[in-house]
Structure formats: C-alpha cells, structure tokens
Length: 475
Ligand code: AMP
Ligand code: ZN
Image (cartoon, rainbow, N blue to C red; front, side, top):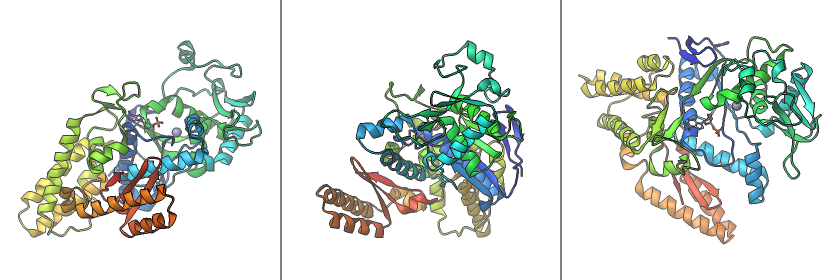
C-alpha cells in the first residue's frame, strides 16, 4: 500500500517515498501561545494527527517523528505579558497547557517533539550566522535581513516571481531594507521586551527563522513532510525554504528543505471568514464545553482537508448523529470480543489517497453495517475488530459505547468533581493553601487534572490525554 499526497510545491498528487522508512519526519507549524485556539486552528491539528496516525500504521509506531513547535516568542505575547504585568513565560506556559489539553480533547496525539523557540535560540543564531556567511543576508541597524534577490528559487512554493511581488507590493519599506521583500531574521527588542544576546546586538528572532532553525536542529534537513494551513504558503513557508536552503549552501541549492508540502484549506463559520471584527471567532476551549470532543474531531474530518469546510450547527448535529449511530452499533455488540488487528486495510487504502477522510467515513459506515448484518459469531468478531481498527487510524470510536450515551462520564462522579474543584477555588481565593493542596490530591486520586486560570479552574479526566474520548469542564 502506497501513500499518495498532493504536494503543494509540485502542485500535483505524488507517491510518497520517505527518505528513510525507519525515520519518517513530519513538521507542522504550531500555535503562538498568547491566547486560546479557535476552531480553524484545530483543523490542521486534527488533519495532521490523522496523517501522523496513518504514517505510524504504514511505517511503524516508532519510525515516525512528528514535531509541532510552540511559538513562545512573539509581539502578541509581549503585549499580553505587558498588559497583565507578568513575564512572557507566565502567558506562554498557561496557554500552551490549555492548547495541549484542548487538542487532547479533540483526540489529537501529542507530537513526538514540541520544540519551543525559547529553547532553540542557539540553533536560531547558528542558522542566521550560516545564512550570513553564505552571502544570503545582511546586518543593518541591529537587524539581520534575508536578501531575497540572492536566492534565485525565491517564490517557487507560492509560484510568485519577485518582480510581481515588487509590482504589487504592500510591504513596509523600512530604511534598513535593501529590497522591500527582504524579511527579518533578527531584530532589536524594544526597551522592556525580552531580548537575547547576539553578534548583531540584543534582540529576538523573526517568526520565519524560528521554524526553519527548529526543523534543522530537531529533525535535521531535509524533512519528509512539512504541513500547515494554506495561509502559511506565503510568506511563511516560502521564507522557511529560503532560510533552510541558504543556511546549507552558498547557492541555496541542495537536496532540499522539505521533500513534500501539505496545506489544509480554511474553515469558515456559517459561510463567513472567522474574524474578531465579525465577532464570530469560535474557541475550541468553549466549544468542548458544549459538544463532545470526538464530534468536533469528526466534523473537522468530514470534508477533504484541502477543500474549505464550513462550520455550522447542522454539521455538528449531523456528525453527532453519525457517531451516535456507530456507537449504537458498538453498544449493541458490546459483548462481542474485538481482536487486536494491526490495521484495517480498506481504511488505510482510502487514507493513502491523499487523506480522503470523507471516503473514510463511508468506509466506517460500511464496516458498522457489516457488524450489524454479520451472520455468526466469528463474522461478528471480525467485523467489530475491523471497525475498531479503522476508527483507531482516524482517532474515532475508541470510547466506551455506554459512556458515549451517558455523556462521557458518570453524572455522580461529575457532580463530585465539580464540587471539589469549586471547593478548591474557594480555598485558593482564601489563600488556604493546605486545604487547596489536600483537595488537589483528592482530585488527583480521582484521575482528574485541574488547570487553574485567572477566572477559576477547568478540569479534565486524565484519560482524555490518551486516545480515549475526553471530557472537560470549566467553572
Ligand atoms: P495562527 O495561530 O494564525 O498562526 O494559525 C495556526 C494554524 O492554524 C496555522 O497552520 C494556520 O494556517 C491555521 N489556521 C488559522 N486559521 C484557520 C482557519 N480558519 N481554517 C483552517 N486553518 C486555519
Ligand atoms: Zn512555521
């Protein structure tokens, strides 16, 4: 079975050949952690989680390295830290934790590596120095800029020529730039902002260099697959290629930076682009209070990843009833033992066709039907095993069918946890630390993770961080 993916660079569906089948590498641009992720941000997370699961099924669990970075250096982070009068890591740790908890609720496995910018400053400085040494950048007024005219292949990914870019330019013309499209590798920090020492003065990295340096340092070049939303093709990924290649060779030509590029389409909300000005930005953190994480995940996978996806109440309702149907079948045949099958060939086959998740759902329905209509016990065992194995590759149907219809957690347990969390918030507000600690321990014993926030606390069952369907609650 061979994976075919649509490669953005070649603009066609191509057969995927990893450089080393025992070390398949995948990198996806991760969140900038200054606020909550919205449902559009969750689309690449869930889509590339399915790719991660598929690669693991094809090449073996320990042969796939998936890195998703955490951008913890950024102007918006600086602003949030300044507004709240705290250090940036108070903001970034807080939102990185929430991000990971929310994405776990959507059934996303933790990537193998989660490199942070603040832990990779040396790698970033080294890559900038290499680009400078190779004659593809210049230092000016405390900035280091990439010289786009020095790199002939600039624009290859987005299929733009530098001349067209200049003609239609709306890029800020700064006195330290030779060409308006030259982009920042390093820039001075403003007074009071976090700064790192560098040969070009104290400052901080530009956004694009963060990814290319973390890729080189954490995965090694070239990587197999680089992913992200299609808005990142230009300038972010175009600039990553320029940096990654020009750091390696004076002519920016070598075996490559990323061997395949995959980009997900955009999610709209009831037909509109999600935007603050329209007031229609839906946060994952809020949605998981209302809709089971698994329903959100399945809805995100209902359309092919490259196309648009419109988020509506109807989509959620349809997806809920689709999953209810399949969990209903699993509940009906709860007594039938499932065999641990390595994978379900039919589902792998449709996913190998450029992650065709809409067809994967059709396949799931067919497998559920096969279970319903199986003639004898042996056929039922085989059908149930296939259905569960197919669900596993998609990150679906792994929960307890009884619990699915109960809403994921025993009502008494939920009431008890809510009461304990409220008690603990009260103890913390009263600065009664011994009580707060005692209650945390009790919650811990119940298998509950509590996440404190400025406005109270949220909780989540620890099992939700594994592949199980999770449940989380705010207070
Ligand atoms: P950002 O925090 O804006 O850099 O976005 C993080 C990730 O979410 C990137 O891969 C974006 O391409 C992706 N993304 C942002 N908005 C949407 C959207 N509405 N639909 C799909 N993907 C999105
Ligand atoms: Zn990136």
